[in-house]
Amino acid sequence: MKFMEKELFHELVKETLLPYLQISSDRLHEPVVVTNTPQYWKCIGVGNYAAVFEHQDYENWVVKVYSREPQQIKQEVKVYKQLGIHPAYSELIGYGENYLILKKLKGVTLYEAVHQGIPIPEQVIKDVSEALDYARKRGLNPFDIHGKNVMMKENRGYVVDVSDFYKSGIDRKWRDLVKAYYKVYVPFFYKYNIRIPYFLLNGVRRGYRLYRTIKRKKNVHK
Image (cartoon, rainbow, N blue to C red; front, side, top):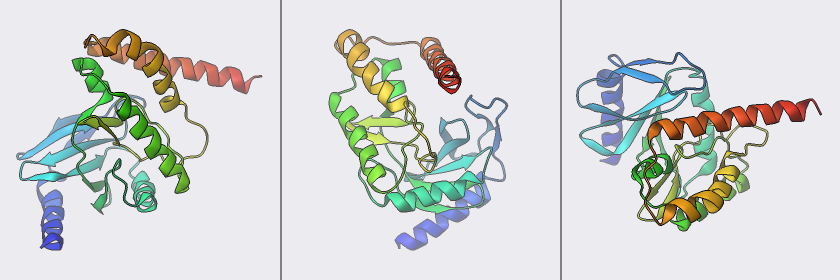
């Protein structure tokens, strides 16, 4: 029955979502833009390469559709297979030329939690750090882990996006986020449920990216 259900959902994606979906990506470091979502489908998240959709009749699965660089799907499929089963990660259900079908992770991203003033427990940070260590032990390189790629539910942490885990090099986003959590968030925001507007959060995100770009160029010229 489970196999048949997966096949039916796969056909639903190919027949009712993909032919009518409109996604554009005009700026390299900004989220893609969804301009049309078919009936019965809902966009529940966007990233710099893809958007994520759910169908009203299937609450446990989501579809990640790539807007650019669809060749990365093969890499992401390999990552999920290499990760195996872990409670802090999603699971690969199926895939096509420009999309993945994944187990739905339910909760709120840390980015959205800060915006809404929802307290982020320390256990969430510990769960994600442990999950990233697990990925390293599986031969992967956790990359591009930030507030929009980490989710929490019932005081537990989850990693939403593993698409860049195949990359080489050192990515400092999660390490810097953990530092900011203990040095800034805990003493100034955690107790008082302060809500941060999106324009400030986006300003911090762009400022951080600029800071890292300048820092990287300085290190190259040393």
